[in-house]
Each structure stands twice: as structure tokens, then as C-alpha cells.
Image (cartoon, rainbow, N blue to C red; front, top):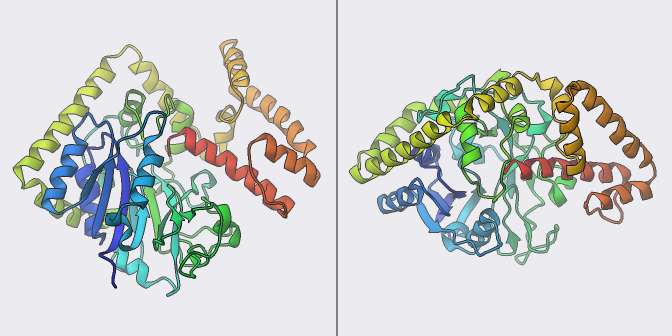
Length: 426
């Protein structure tokens, strides 16, 4: 029996009304026939907009009622994987509201991508391409794909996280980056298929077994952008980024959107305009959606909500200092990031001490070198497999009993990168 849907998106949102219509129109334009969104605690009417979009046949909306002590994102994933409106589909892609699928083959449609994949493909890992501010300071409700056209180069290792489009199976567990089996490891599933066996990268080439088992990021060997990439508009304008300081996120993580993360995400080294080829078609679909007076009113109210928050931000006594802080961070060259991000994985006591040194006037570069030497001493001590395993255990990293030294080191590095993204709310 054929599935009800062909290409399904599962997303979770809060207060995304300023760009929701574009996001839905874009992905419907490139061929996704089923868009399912869970929302929680919206103040800008995102939930009402999605309910109206459902009435109009553009998307499906479900409430994400989060139990006390739980986080919205994993709760929505659990709800989604139990929802036939999500799983009754040939393909499922879990993604966020600041991500746009950018198909680079054929006419840029999702069907063009699937037609280029090996027939036995079970999943495709779409590597992020981070997009920066493109020098835009002010918040504005214009099209994301038109406003932000500069991003990170292919070799930007910090941006190699993936989002996965996969064939749903009964015994898998949904994840924000990729699915796993319900037991958290690769194994034969109930129908005799192994969903993780035939996994390809964004160029249609097989992913290594190490990714099948635990990976959520591309590596130098597995990186592929030839057929598809996931545009990640994590920054947008300076003011849009600052607004995150006064807005929650789907992971309940406070105070993440600081200058250090802005220095990582504000990547503008290359021009990347592939998504822009869909602008005309997206605008047509947006016009169709907004021809509905109810939908137009809801979007206007969402824009007004965010405009008010921008004015509150500008009126705050900290606005000028925050903006200047971001501008300094944005000026950090891509090859100098480690010199300003040296505190990201340090214990709080170290971070407090570093702030004291900064207040005393010690240059960041000198502090970075001091930290590098200290961390290097600890890292250099882990020379044997047993010492490596001890280091992994100290950092809370699980490694297989038969893991090689290279695999242990890779697991530690992936865990560090995962913490960085988790702290950023990604």
C-alpha cells in the first residue's frame, strides 16, 4: 500500500510568525507535499497562523503540550514519531524554522534530488551551510532567501552538522539531526531492513559506517554538497540575533545568543544564491496564501508583535553595547575563531576566571594561548587507549569496547561539537 504522503517535513516552532509564510511557501514550492509543525507557548500567533494554514490545506498543526521538566523539542519529536500524519510518508525530514532545503540539481525540487540518489537509499544527510547577516543590521520582515545570500565556505568544519531525510520505519527513534533505532544503535529493524545501512551524503555518495552508528556531523571524507545542502540562517540581521536574548527557544536554554556564538555563525565568506532561484515561485505561493484575509491579518499581527519587540530592544539601555559587541565579533576572521572562542567548553570556574583576566586588561589572544597550553597539557596526557578512554569517560562520552584510538578521539570531538550546538539551541 502506498504511503499517504511522499515528502514530509516535521518541525517544531515558537514565535516564528515573521517568516512562517515564506518558509511554508518555499518548501511547498520545491515539492514537499506534507508539512507538519508542532508549536508551544507562542506569543506572536504562530499557532493561529498554522491552524489557518491547515484549514487552507498548506500545512498541518499540532499542539506541543510540554510536561513539566521536559523540553519542547524532544517532546515534539516523540509526538511526531507516533503521529501517522508524519510517519505515513515515503520520506520524512526533521528540520527547523531557520533552515531551508537547497537542492542543487535539476530544477531544485526535492523530487530532482531523490531521482539522483541510488535506488536503495534509506536516508540522505544534508550538511548545513551557515548563512550570516550579509551586513544587515536592522530587523525586517523581508524574504530570508533574498536578504541573506552570503554564507560559510565548504570547509567550515564548525558548520558540518547535518539534517537527515529518511524513509520512516516502525522501530526507529526520531532525532533532530538523524534517526536511530529505538535502542540507540544500528540493528536490523522489524521488517528486515536496516534504515542506517544505505545512507548517503549531499553528493549522493555512501556515508561511512562510523556515521551510521553515531554521527550527526559530516567529516572531511564524508562531506558532500553537490546535490543538496541545508541552508541554516542561524544569524539573520544583527537585531534579529539580539531578539533571541529576549525570546525563548525550543530547547529551554537561556542566554545562549552571545557574541561568541555570533562570531561562529555570522559567516559571509562566499556568495550562495541557489535558493534565490525559487524566489519568484515562492512569492507566487505567498501571494496565494496571503490572499486569504484571515491569513493576511494574522501575518500582519505577527509582524507587529516582532516590530514592538525590536522597539523595546532599541530602547533598552544595553542595545548600543550589545550591537557593538556583535559588530566586533562579526569582524573575527574565520581562521581566527579559536582565539575568541576559547571559553566555550571550559568549566564555569574557568570562565569566571577568564572574565576576571579580561577585566584586568589581559588581551584575549594571550588568554587564549594560556588556555590552549593548559588544555594541551591535559590532552597530551591521553596517549594510551586506556588514557583516551578515561578522557572520554571524564567528558561523558560513551565509546564502544572495540573502538580504535582514532574512533575514540573522533567521538570526543563530536561530543564537544554537539555540546557547542546544544548550548546554541541548534
